[in-house]
Amino acid sequence: MRLAAIFMLAWTLVSGGRARAGFTETLPRGTFLFDSSLSLSVLHHRYDNDGKKTTLIDSVQRYEPGSGLQGTLVPEAEVNYLVLINQLQYG
Image 1 (cartoon, rainbow, N blue to C red):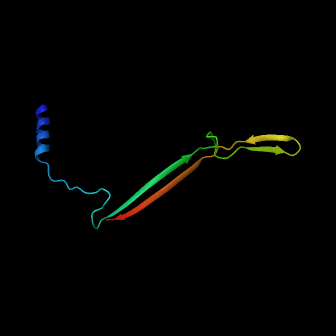
Image 2: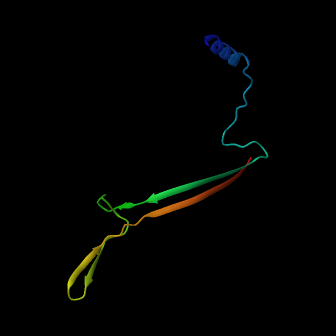
């Protein structure tokens, strides 16, 4: 087992060829690259002026005419953003 590891190391050092270096952000001449990515973002809460976490929509107090406070509505909202980003590059 140890002999095989030494042989593999020697083979890697001896058989190494030339590597072509280049900038990774530059495409080779005459080539196209189509890049597509998907961005998903979910939002459950927001922060008020004091830096405290609150609901996305403010609570609403409902009053019935002549009898006072009927109740408070506290909405549980959620916002989902789904964005598809496409890029076409030419070298």
